[in-house]
Image (cartoon, rainbow, N blue to C red; front, side):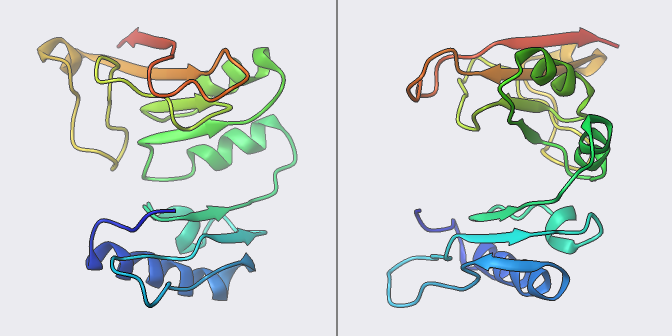
Length: 170
């Protein structure tokens, strides 16, 4: 895992992780990496994270994974949509029908299925809720609600150029 972009970013991640230690169960990591040039933070995993925890609600922008249990598909979607930050989301399942059904219900600008690395400069990028800055790709986007749903169709990592885009008009 590489360094964070700035000291400010490192301090934000550290503060959210410290808060997470009080609100959830720390499974792995949870600290800065000293002795290296750059703003490194140890990959951190929390389990049983309540939806009202800061580390669940805020955009961390660091190597932090929050695992929150859910009871069924509706509950999972409700948890995913219980955030003011919805730039991107992930759906992980072996059931493709379920994956696309859930992706359609998640209120995020981008939903990745079974991956989180797909992207291309020609793909749409839409801010959602308080995340991101604005619509990209021209004036028409101001009057449309575009969502990118992307998944890999290969067994190996496809790199940044394989995706499926889905757009809707408001």
